[in-house]
Each structure stands twice: as structure tokens, then as C-alpha cells.
Length: 180
Image 1 (cartoon, helix red, strand yellow):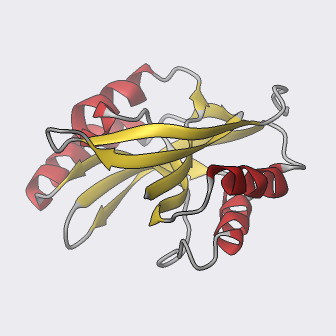
Image 2 (spheres, one colour):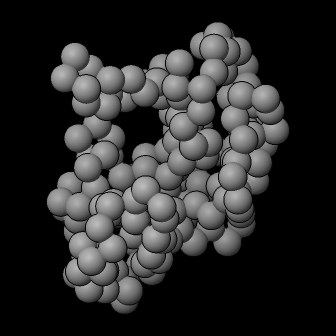
């Protein structure tokens, strides 16, 4: 089965992000703005094993703050993306992602370097992404505070119409105290 491990940060003053995400990211049909810890991977690991991995990786992690600001464009062979950059001065997200990939070795492999972000737009046309980038410049001068209080493991599949469906397999709650 295809899985993904991600967080849906709780974002203050999030309307502009949600509206942009809903308008320009087709994934908005099945998920809210999110940050992937482990990108989609094939695995037959039992849910109980995923839960044990989460307990091991996140045992000492409380809810934590991050901020979101700035836009980055990524032009790739199959799709083009606009990312809302995540500013994580403590490198919590990067370190947690590395720990998860290490524990999932053999099932999930990171291609390239991990840079936490929220994909706010996705389109196969470079011209469309460039046009969307003009509209996204509004994010350049805004910083959004957010916090992470849970980790999700979801299963990706297709429904009878061929649409992608994301079902939460596991939600692991961190302590419900926002770090200051």
C-alpha cells in the first residue's frame, strides 16, 4: 500500500493560505495544507509497527512552533510547484524526517535533500506556474505563525472514479502544550 507521513500545521490567520491552496493545488480535494515528513512510499508494514516507529521517533517531542514565509518555485519533469517555505530554526522537522526515514529504511527513501515546505500550487504548465507565482508574491511579505501538534500516517489509494483518496491510518498526538 502507498503511505505518506505528514503534518497539517495549525496556522494562524490561515485563510489566505487555505484559499490559495484550494484554488491552485489539486491535492486540496483530499488533504489540507500540509508538510510531508516522509513522501509517498510503498510499504506493507503493519499499522502497529508504524505506531511503534512513531512512539520511538516522537517520544521526546512536544508540540512546537514553526513559521511560514516566502515562496519557492520548483520546475520538474512531470509537475511544477510553488512552495510556501517553512522556517524551522531548530531544524525539528528536518531532524524528525531524518529519524523517520532511518527507521523506515528499505521502505522509504528520500531523493535529494529534505526541505520542509507546504506545496500551495501544482501545475504541469510552466506558464501557469509562472502566472500563479505572480499572484503568490503576496506571500513574500507575510509571515504566518503555526504549530505542529500531531503527526499523520495516511494511506493513498484511488476511488472507483480514479480520484486519489487519503485515509488517515494513524494520528499521533504530541503534547497539547504550545512551546513558546
